[in-house]
Image (tube, rainbow, N blue to C red; front, side, top):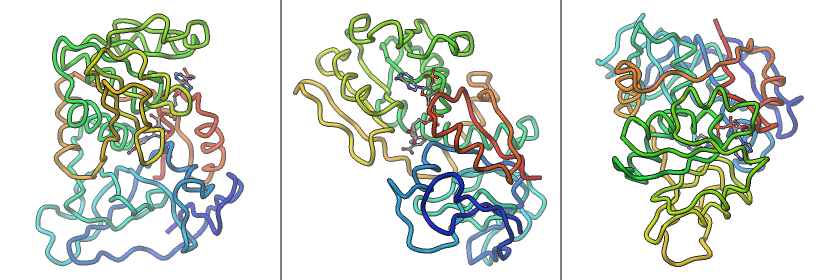
Length: 307
Ligand SMILES: NC(=O)c1ccc[n+]([C@@H]2O[C@H](COP(=O)([O-])OP(=O)(O)OC[C@H]3O[C@@H](n4cnc5c(N)ncnc54)[C@H](OP(=O)(O)O)[C@@H]3O)[C@@H](O)[C@H]2O)c1
Protein backbone atom coordinates (compact mmCIF):
# COMPACT_ATOMS: atom_id res chain seq x y z
CA UNK A 1 0.00 0.00 0.00
CA UNK A 2 0.98 3.65 -0.38
CA UNK A 3 1.51 5.49 2.90
CA UNK A 4 3.04 8.65 4.31
CA UNK A 5 5.63 7.90 6.98
CA UNK A 6 8.62 9.37 8.75
CA UNK A 7 12.00 7.65 8.90
CA UNK A 8 13.04 9.99 11.72
CA UNK A 9 11.67 13.03 13.55
CA UNK A 10 12.01 16.45 11.94
CA UNK A 11 10.35 19.03 9.71
CA UNK A 12 7.66 18.49 7.05
CA UNK A 13 10.38 17.39 4.61
CA UNK A 14 10.71 14.17 6.66
CA UNK A 15 7.26 13.04 5.47
CA UNK A 16 7.88 10.40 2.80
CA UNK A 17 5.30 9.00 0.41
CA UNK A 18 6.07 5.41 -0.53
CA UNK A 19 5.22 1.73 -0.31
CA UNK A 20 4.77 -0.18 2.93
CA UNK A 21 3.40 -3.71 3.52
CA UNK A 22 -0.38 -4.11 3.62
CA UNK A 23 -1.69 -4.59 7.19
CA UNK A 24 -3.07 -7.98 8.27
CA UNK A 25 -5.94 -7.98 10.78
CA UNK A 26 -5.31 -9.54 14.20
CA UNK A 27 -8.10 -11.11 16.24
CA UNK A 28 -10.83 -8.52 16.85
CA UNK A 29 -9.53 -6.17 14.15
CA UNK A 30 -10.78 -5.08 10.75
CA UNK A 31 -8.75 -3.79 7.83
CA UNK A 32 -10.21 -0.63 6.32
CA UNK A 33 -9.39 0.63 2.82
CA UNK A 34 -9.02 4.31 3.60
CA UNK A 35 -10.81 6.84 1.39
CA UNK A 36 -10.10 9.96 3.46
CA UNK A 37 -7.84 10.72 6.43
CA UNK A 38 -7.63 14.01 8.28
CA UNK A 39 -4.74 16.14 9.50
CA UNK A 40 -4.88 16.87 13.22
CA UNK A 41 -2.90 19.35 15.29
CA UNK A 42 -1.20 16.42 16.99
CA UNK A 43 0.25 15.11 13.72
CA UNK A 44 3.01 17.67 13.34
CA UNK A 45 3.79 17.35 17.06
CA UNK A 46 4.29 13.60 16.45
CA UNK A 47 6.30 14.30 13.28
CA UNK A 48 8.73 16.71 14.96
CA UNK A 49 9.09 14.52 18.05
CA UNK A 50 8.27 17.38 20.44
CA UNK A 51 5.30 15.72 22.15
CA UNK A 52 5.15 12.05 21.21
CA UNK A 53 8.69 10.75 20.48
CA UNK A 54 8.74 7.46 18.55
CA UNK A 55 11.37 4.75 18.66
CA UNK A 56 10.24 2.59 15.74
CA UNK A 57 10.52 3.73 12.12
CA UNK A 58 9.16 3.89 9.48
CA UNK A 59 6.27 5.40 11.42
CA UNK A 60 2.96 6.14 9.70
CA UNK A 61 1.12 9.21 11.04
CA UNK A 62 -2.61 9.89 11.12
CA UNK A 63 -5.28 9.48 13.78
CA UNK A 64 -8.66 9.40 12.02
CA UNK A 65 -10.10 8.25 8.73
CA UNK A 66 -13.11 7.01 6.80
CA UNK A 67 -13.20 4.10 4.38
CA UNK A 68 -14.52 0.66 3.50
CA UNK A 69 -13.98 -2.60 5.43
CA UNK A 70 -11.83 -4.88 3.27
CA UNK A 71 -10.91 -7.73 5.66
CA UNK A 72 -12.13 -9.13 8.98
CA UNK A 73 -9.95 -10.55 11.74
CA UNK A 74 -10.97 -13.61 13.72
CA UNK A 75 -13.93 -13.03 16.02
CA UNK A 76 -15.29 -9.92 14.26
CA UNK A 77 -19.02 -10.28 13.70
CA UNK A 78 -20.30 -6.68 13.80
CA UNK A 79 -19.03 -5.68 10.33
CA UNK A 80 -19.01 -7.16 6.85
CA UNK A 81 -16.57 -6.60 4.00
CA UNK A 82 -17.71 -3.66 1.88
CA UNK A 83 -19.29 -1.70 4.75
CA UNK A 84 -18.51 2.04 4.97
CA UNK A 85 -17.00 2.99 8.33
CA UNK A 86 -15.04 5.71 10.08
CA UNK A 87 -12.87 5.72 13.19
CA UNK A 88 -10.31 7.34 15.43
CA UNK A 89 -7.21 5.24 16.13
CA UNK A 90 -6.64 3.97 19.66
CA UNK A 91 -4.47 6.06 21.98
CA UNK A 92 -0.89 5.15 21.05
CA UNK A 93 -1.85 3.82 17.62
CA UNK A 94 -1.63 5.83 14.42
CA UNK A 95 -1.37 4.96 10.73
CA UNK A 96 -4.26 6.70 8.93
CA UNK A 97 -2.01 8.45 6.35
CA UNK A 98 -2.19 5.27 4.27
CA UNK A 99 -4.31 3.34 1.82
CA UNK A 100 -5.11 0.69 4.46
CA UNK A 101 -5.18 0.33 8.23
CA UNK A 102 -5.84 -2.50 10.70
CA UNK A 103 -7.81 -1.34 13.74
CA UNK A 104 -9.83 -2.83 16.61
CA UNK A 105 -13.40 -3.33 15.39
CA UNK A 106 -14.67 -1.98 18.72
CA UNK A 107 -13.31 1.50 17.80
CA UNK A 108 -15.00 1.60 14.40
CA UNK A 109 -18.46 3.03 13.63
CA UNK A 110 -20.69 2.68 10.61
CA UNK A 111 -20.65 5.71 8.32
CA UNK A 112 -24.07 6.76 7.07
CA UNK A 113 -24.39 7.17 3.30
CA UNK A 114 -25.49 10.78 3.88
CA UNK A 115 -22.02 11.67 5.20
CA UNK A 116 -19.13 11.64 2.70
CA UNK A 117 -15.86 9.91 3.55
CA UNK A 118 -14.19 13.33 3.56
CA UNK A 119 -16.68 14.80 6.04
CA UNK A 120 -16.60 11.69 8.25
CA UNK A 121 -12.79 11.87 8.42
CA UNK A 122 -12.98 15.60 9.16
CA UNK A 123 -15.47 15.06 12.00
CA UNK A 124 -14.02 11.99 13.72
CA UNK A 125 -11.28 13.15 16.13
CA UNK A 126 -12.50 16.75 16.23
CA UNK A 127 -16.05 15.63 17.11
CA UNK A 128 -14.89 13.03 19.60
CA UNK A 129 -12.66 15.59 21.33
CA UNK A 130 -15.39 18.24 21.44
CA UNK A 131 -17.92 15.75 22.85
CA UNK A 132 -15.55 14.50 25.55
CA UNK A 133 -14.56 18.06 26.48
CA UNK A 134 -17.95 19.81 26.41
CA UNK A 135 -20.36 17.04 27.42
CA UNK A 136 -18.30 14.56 29.47
CA UNK A 137 -15.70 16.84 31.10
CA UNK A 138 -17.22 20.33 31.38
CA UNK A 139 -20.75 18.86 31.65
CA UNK A 140 -22.08 22.04 30.03
CA UNK A 141 -25.73 22.73 30.79
CA UNK A 142 -28.55 24.70 29.15
CA UNK A 143 -28.44 28.37 30.15
CA UNK A 144 -24.73 28.38 31.04
CA UNK A 145 -22.18 30.65 29.37
CA UNK A 146 -19.07 29.17 27.75
CA UNK A 147 -16.04 30.82 26.15
CA UNK A 148 -14.62 28.60 23.37
CA UNK A 149 -11.12 29.69 22.39
CA UNK A 150 -10.00 29.33 18.75
CA UNK A 151 -13.45 29.18 17.13
CA UNK A 152 -12.21 28.65 13.56
CA UNK A 153 -10.32 25.44 14.39
CA UNK A 154 -11.59 21.93 13.81
CA UNK A 155 -12.41 20.97 17.42
CA UNK A 156 -13.76 24.40 18.40
CA UNK A 157 -16.06 24.67 15.40
CA UNK A 158 -17.74 21.40 16.44
CA UNK A 159 -17.80 22.56 20.06
CA UNK A 160 -19.53 25.87 19.22
CA UNK A 161 -22.37 24.03 17.46
CA UNK A 162 -22.59 21.41 20.22
CA UNK A 163 -22.74 24.06 22.96
CA UNK A 164 -25.51 25.94 21.11
CA UNK A 165 -27.39 22.64 20.69
CA UNK A 166 -27.11 22.07 24.46
CA UNK A 167 -28.65 25.52 24.96
CA UNK A 168 -25.65 27.44 26.28
CA UNK A 169 -24.65 31.02 25.53
CA UNK A 170 -21.48 30.77 23.42
CA UNK A 171 -18.68 33.32 23.16
CA UNK A 172 -15.74 32.51 20.91
CA UNK A 173 -12.48 34.03 19.64
CA UNK A 174 -11.21 34.19 16.05
CA UNK A 175 -9.17 36.47 13.81
CA UNK A 176 -11.26 38.89 11.72
CA UNK A 177 -10.67 36.95 8.50
CA UNK A 178 -12.51 33.98 10.00
CA UNK A 179 -15.49 35.84 11.49
CA UNK A 180 -17.92 35.11 8.64
CA UNK A 181 -17.08 31.40 8.84
CA UNK A 182 -17.38 31.30 12.62
CA UNK A 183 -20.60 33.38 12.66
CA UNK A 184 -22.30 30.73 10.52
CA UNK A 185 -21.62 28.18 13.30
CA UNK A 186 -24.05 30.11 15.52
CA UNK A 187 -22.16 31.61 18.50
CA UNK A 188 -23.73 34.51 20.39
CA UNK A 189 -20.55 36.62 20.37
CA UNK A 190 -17.25 36.57 18.45
CA UNK A 191 -14.18 38.38 19.73
CA UNK A 192 -11.43 39.42 17.32
CA UNK A 193 -8.54 38.46 19.57
CA UNK A 194 -6.14 40.67 17.59
CA UNK A 195 -8.23 43.79 18.26
CA UNK A 196 -9.56 43.09 21.76
CA UNK A 197 -8.16 41.47 24.90
CA UNK A 198 -10.71 38.75 25.70
CA UNK A 199 -10.07 39.11 29.44
CA UNK A 200 -11.30 42.74 29.24
CA UNK A 201 -14.56 41.97 27.43
CA UNK A 202 -15.58 38.57 28.84
CA UNK A 203 -16.34 37.72 32.49
CA UNK A 204 -18.60 35.57 34.61
CA UNK A 205 -18.40 32.46 32.42
CA UNK A 206 -19.49 29.09 33.77
CA UNK A 207 -17.05 27.28 31.49
CA UNK A 208 -14.11 27.71 29.11
CA UNK A 209 -13.07 25.29 26.38
CA UNK A 210 -9.51 26.21 25.45
CA UNK A 211 -8.08 24.88 22.14
CA UNK A 212 -5.28 27.40 21.44
CA UNK A 213 -2.63 26.80 24.10
CA UNK A 214 0.28 28.93 25.33
CA UNK A 215 -0.53 32.14 27.18
CA UNK A 216 -4.15 32.07 25.90
CA UNK A 217 -4.65 29.02 28.15
CA UNK A 218 -3.26 30.64 31.30
CA UNK A 219 -5.20 33.88 30.72
CA UNK A 220 -8.46 32.01 30.17
CA UNK A 221 -8.99 31.43 33.91
CA UNK A 222 -9.69 35.16 34.29
CA UNK A 223 -13.08 34.99 32.53
CA UNK A 224 -14.52 32.31 34.86
CA UNK A 225 -16.94 33.07 37.65
CA UNK A 226 -16.17 31.50 41.06
CA UNK A 227 -16.82 27.77 40.78
CA UNK A 228 -16.31 27.87 37.01
CA UNK A 229 -14.53 25.13 35.12
CA UNK A 230 -12.10 25.15 32.19
CA UNK A 231 -11.02 22.31 29.89
CA UNK A 232 -7.70 22.42 27.98
CA UNK A 233 -6.66 20.35 24.96
CA UNK A 234 -3.70 22.34 23.61
CA UNK A 235 -1.55 22.60 26.75
CA UNK A 236 -0.03 19.12 26.79
CA UNK A 237 -1.10 16.12 28.85
CA UNK A 238 -1.76 18.13 32.04
CA UNK A 239 -4.24 20.96 32.51
CA UNK A 240 -2.48 24.25 33.42
CA UNK A 241 -2.46 25.28 37.07
CA UNK A 242 -4.81 28.22 37.70
CA UNK A 243 -3.57 31.33 39.55
CA UNK A 244 -6.85 31.34 41.50
CA UNK A 245 -8.21 28.69 43.84
CA UNK A 246 -11.92 29.00 43.10
CA UNK A 247 -12.04 27.39 39.64
CA UNK A 248 -11.47 23.93 38.17
CA UNK A 249 -8.78 23.21 35.54
CA UNK A 250 -9.52 20.02 33.60
CA UNK A 251 -7.72 17.94 30.96
CA UNK A 252 -10.31 15.91 28.99
CA UNK A 253 -9.40 12.23 28.71
CA UNK A 254 -10.13 11.70 25.03
CA UNK A 255 -10.47 7.92 24.99
CA UNK A 256 -11.57 6.40 21.69
CA UNK A 257 -14.74 4.38 21.33
CA UNK A 258 -17.68 3.68 19.06
CA UNK A 259 -20.46 5.37 21.10
CA UNK A 260 -18.94 8.84 20.72
CA UNK A 261 -18.64 8.35 16.95
CA UNK A 262 -22.28 7.30 16.87
CA UNK A 263 -23.16 10.47 18.77
CA UNK A 264 -21.35 12.52 16.08
CA UNK A 265 -23.46 10.77 13.43
CA UNK A 266 -26.66 11.43 15.41
CA UNK A 267 -25.84 15.14 15.89
CA UNK A 268 -25.11 15.56 12.18
CA UNK A 269 -28.29 13.67 11.23
CA UNK A 270 -30.32 15.90 13.57
CA UNK A 271 -28.87 19.00 11.89
CA UNK A 272 -27.29 20.12 15.16
CA UNK A 273 -23.75 20.01 13.78
CA UNK A 274 -22.48 20.30 10.26
CA UNK A 275 -19.04 19.30 8.99
CA UNK A 276 -16.26 21.88 9.00
CA UNK A 277 -14.92 23.63 5.93
CA UNK A 278 -12.48 21.18 4.37
CA UNK A 279 -9.36 21.77 2.28
CA UNK A 280 -8.41 18.63 0.35
CA UNK A 281 -4.90 17.37 -0.30
CA UNK A 282 -3.60 14.25 -2.04
CA UNK A 283 -1.71 11.99 0.37
CA UNK A 284 1.48 12.58 -1.60
CA UNK A 285 1.35 16.27 -0.55
CA UNK A 286 1.35 15.65 3.20
CA UNK A 287 4.29 18.01 3.73
CA UNK A 288 2.32 20.96 2.30
CA UNK A 289 -0.66 20.09 4.53
CA UNK A 290 1.59 19.96 7.60
CA UNK A 291 3.02 23.40 6.86
CA UNK A 292 -0.53 24.82 6.89
CA UNK A 293 -1.55 22.96 10.05
CA UNK A 294 1.63 23.92 11.90
CA UNK A 295 1.09 27.62 11.12
CA UNK A 296 -1.96 27.41 13.49
CA UNK A 297 -4.34 29.64 11.52
CA UNK A 298 -6.20 27.00 9.60
CA UNK A 299 -9.95 27.41 9.16
CA UNK A 300 -11.81 24.09 9.48
CA UNK A 301 -9.92 20.92 8.52
CA UNK A 302 -7.31 19.56 6.13
CA UNK A 303 -8.24 16.17 4.71
CA UNK A 304 -6.28 13.76 2.52
CA UNK A 305 -8.37 12.26 -0.28
CA UNK A 306 -6.69 8.88 -0.36
CA UNK A 307 -8.80 7.14 -3.04
N1 LIG B 1 -7.37 14.60 22.09
C1 LIG B 1 -6.86 15.79 22.23
O1 LIG B 1 -6.43 16.15 23.29
C2 LIG B 1 -6.85 16.71 21.06
C3 LIG B 1 -7.60 16.37 19.95
C4 LIG B 1 -7.63 17.25 18.88
C5 LIG B 1 -6.87 18.42 18.93
N2 LIG B 1 -6.10 18.68 20.03
C6 LIG B 1 -5.29 19.91 20.08
O2 LIG B 1 -6.18 21.00 20.07
C7 LIG B 1 -5.60 22.10 19.37
C8 LIG B 1 -6.59 22.61 18.35
O3 LIG B 1 -6.71 21.70 17.30
P1 LIG B 1 -7.69 21.95 16.10
O4 LIG B 1 -7.36 20.90 15.09
O5 LIG B 1 -9.07 22.07 16.56
O6 LIG B 1 -7.34 23.41 15.63
P2 LIG B 1 -6.28 23.90 14.57
O7 LIG B 1 -6.63 23.32 13.27
O8 LIG B 1 -4.93 23.68 15.13
O9 LIG B 1 -6.66 25.45 14.46
C9 LIG B 1 -6.21 26.34 15.35
C10 LIG B 1 -7.20 27.51 15.29
O10 LIG B 1 -6.81 28.34 16.34
C11 LIG B 1 -7.05 29.66 15.95
N3 LIG B 1 -6.13 30.50 16.71
C12 LIG B 1 -4.77 30.57 16.62
N4 LIG B 1 -4.31 31.43 17.55
C13 LIG B 1 -5.40 31.91 18.22
C14 LIG B 1 -5.58 32.81 19.31
N5 LIG B 1 -4.55 33.45 19.88
N6 LIG B 1 -6.84 33.02 19.77
C15 LIG B 1 -7.90 32.41 19.21
N7 LIG B 1 -7.80 31.55 18.17
C16 LIG B 1 -6.55 31.30 17.70
C17 LIG B 1 -6.85 29.73 14.45
O11 LIG B 1 -7.79 30.61 13.87
P3 LIG B 1 -7.45 32.14 13.53
O12 LIG B 1 -6.78 32.13 12.18
O13 LIG B 1 -8.79 32.79 13.52
O14 LIG B 1 -6.50 32.62 14.55
C18 LIG B 1 -7.16 28.30 14.00
O15 LIG B 1 -8.41 28.20 13.40
C19 LIG B 1 -4.27 21.59 18.81
O16 LIG B 1 -3.23 22.01 19.68
C20 LIG B 1 -4.43 20.09 18.85
O17 LIG B 1 -3.19 19.41 18.97
C21 LIG B 1 -6.10 17.85 21.10
